[in-house]
Length: 194
Image (cartoon, helix red, strand yellow):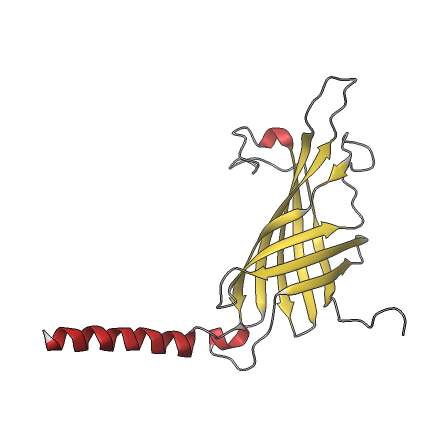
């Protein structure tokens, strides 16, 4: 009886000790490297070759700094392809990023070109016109992110099962890329006034 209690207490102490040693590791430390890189935060992104500017936010999903929620808003969207598709706006990009190296994340995000409902046409709900799937790999230093990627654009009909993701085997109407650029962390700034 006494040895069972000791075994349970020893196992519990080992688990707590392991958490205290390994749990707080972030960034490069989780891969056995040196300094931790903080991926999370808000970033100002620019892909100059395509004229794309975005706001991106990375939020850690675990305390090991290995998985992130990604949200990005395109500030310069061409969601209709110069009027070719009848859309009124582009939704926010949402997705996940996974750490694939000491200072590298790989992300997949999805967004939608949407046509607003009109009472004249008796459309009572907004309609998805296009599905955008963005894939990117980003290499980080503390305050700079260098990214490469591409975007596949699908007609809404590529989602026959209605799960908001293009069906397996669906062919995009266009692939845009390579998307290349840099991002800088949104800095703390002085307030206006004295």
